[in-house]
Amino acid sequence: MRQGNSIFTVGHSTHSMDKFLQLLKAHQVTAIADVRSSPYSRHVPHFSRETLSEALAENGVAYVFLGRELGARSRDNSCYVNDVVSYDRLSNTSEFQSGIHRLLDGRKSYRISLMCSEKDPTECHRTILVAKRLVEIAVPVVHILGDGSVEPHEDTMLRVADILGMPRNDLLRSERDVIADAYKFREKQIAYRRRG
Image 1 (cartoon, one colour):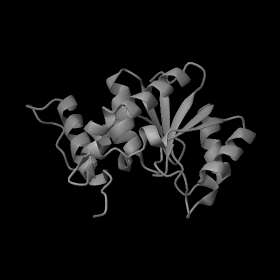
Image 2: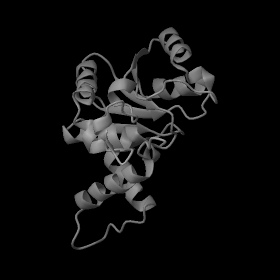
Image 3: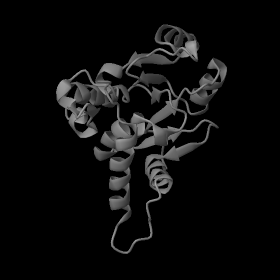
Image 4: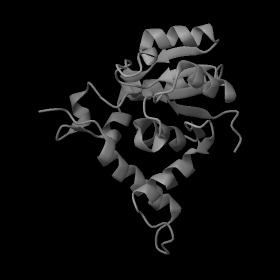
């Protein structure tokens, strides 16, 4: 896969800052778009917004917080169904669309990686919500895995289908159908739920 015009994703997980920076450098990432709704971490405080932004700047990597636009915890009540975020509703808000446009504009000057906290992209909204919308508008997405290897988005979604036990060798269902169902089922598992 040609990665030159791709948008990457990465999870900071419990990496040290040095390891995280190595992952970015290995893939020539020049800008991080932080898509966490809350850009702070008690468990790995070096990934809190201010500390992270400073460390990235010291290493020539730009930082932008897009958690308001592209985060999974919407402040818009119309995005909730029975106190659970609907990714379809969220992705159709003007705020979300604004975040997508910022990524599209940014990739003209930067090699961007979305960043969230989850190590595995199959467990994160950066894949099931944000990357889904990007690939719908023909933006290639590549996930940087914890070991430094990369995985094209379609392969990640097929892995989601496998994790969910969805059959892929069905005569009556295309790979596209399997991936569409994988998005729906994974969203039900990971979408933000408000506490009542």
